[in-house]
Each structure stands twice: as C-alpha cells, then as structure tokens.
Length: 226
Length: 93
Image (cartoon, rainbow over all chains, first blue to last red):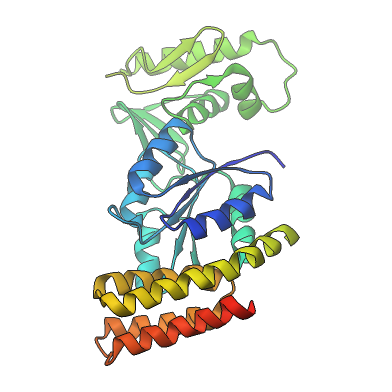
C-alpha cells in the first residue's frame, strides 16, 4: 500500500494521539493541526490525501474549515464529531464532507472508513472547477474558456484535469505520465507535444498564456496568473 | 490492531485518572461553559478509549446541563469523577 499523507484536525491531544497511532500502524504519514488556521497552512504546504476533521474546533468550526479547504483541495474529508444529530450531518455534507464518524468511535470503524475513502481517491467535485477564465466540468467532461467550449482530445483533457487537481503545485513529468498514460511505452516528447497543443488551444480561446507553465527539469504547473 | 489495543490499554488508566481530577476541579469552579465543553470532550474521547460507563455518564449529564435540568451539579460531577476514579484504580472500563 502506498504511503498516504493524512491530515488530522482536532484540538484534543488524547484523540489525535490515538488516531495517529492507528494510522501509523497502516504505514501512513500523519500531520496534526489543533485548529482550522493551522490545518489550512498544512494542507497548502503539503496537500493531504485525506483529511479527518473534528466538527467542534475552537475558533473556526469544522464546517467552515471544510468549506475553506474545499476551495483548493479535492482530498476526501471525514468528519469526526460527538454530534450525532441528522442536522449536524447535513451541515457537514453540505460543507463538502465525504463521510462522517461519530465519537465515541471504534478504532476498527474509523480505519475501515479511512481505507474506503483512500481507495476511492480524490473526490469528484460536485461543481465545475474554475482556474482564471478556464472552467473544467469533470461531471460533464467539458472545458470552456469564457463560456466557450474547447475541443480537446481525451489525452489533452486528462492532462488538464491532472494538472488542475493539484492547482498551484508543480507536477513532475513522471507523475504526469503515470497519471495520464499509466504504463509508458512511448517517446517522452509526446508529453511536451501534448502540453504544447493543449496550451495553444487554451490560449487561442482566450486563456492566459501563463496558465500552464513549464519548470525545466521539474515538471508542469497550472495556476491562474495574477 | 494488536498495537492499537495495547496503546489504548496503556493510556486508558492514566486518562481515567486525569479525567477524575478534571471533574473534581469542575465541581469546585462550577463554570458552566467549561463544564459543557469538558463533558462534550469526555463523552467522545473517553468513550473512544473504551471508558464506556464514564462516557455514558458524561453524555447524560451533558444533556441535563444543556437543558438546565441540573440541581446539585457539584454532586453530579463528583459522582461522575468517582466512576472514572474506579476505572483508574481497577483498570476496568
């Protein structure tokens, strides 16, 4: 099983120690944040594969933290809370949570939920993603620039969604190959040609020409130029 | 999973003792906001560590505190502290 980065957001050290011990046993890398502000800092610096988030945090409450994390992260979010009412669950799901575990919980139950969410991978966003004037609708599998539909090949679309899933972060050429092409048999120039074609189509439609940037010897990044 | 069971067992007695001390302090200070926050935490965390009697007692008391149905709150908190103190000394849940 690959090592995953899991961010645990809870202000109770007894609880976070237990969750840390539990997930370390699975071989995962764990970061702990006692509040929403720290959680956001960690998630921006090192994007997590899964976030376990307490609802009753001091200061910014769990649903608000969830909404803020959802602005830049597609990692699954598991709410951990002592509140078990249906209304609390609805608030959590509305804010963007993927699952819900009520305290007190059995460690086996938490572990099973974590395994399921990690296996499911990053969530399919419910709405389109907007980067600058480029809108990517993963559900409809269409890309528009200023509302005008762009005709992309499947490979170009896959490259764009892979880059956009880690918006603002450089993705290495090898990671991009792995995500888009899987097992690689071809010429590495195909990546450069695909990026070049994709960039040209987007720019021709009115996207900023610095939307996708090449970082020589490192990889590629998509971000909205300021 | 053996490791996590051992970890919880190691921490359980110490957590029960610490919780009993917290509850006795709350019975003296009687700060409702702190009592509510601590009972909420005790319900979730102590229950997760397997201190079920204390966790259920904290949950019941929390409902009554929120409903302002508590008379003799200090006595109630001390009684709950006794539940945790028994877990701390006997190692039972």
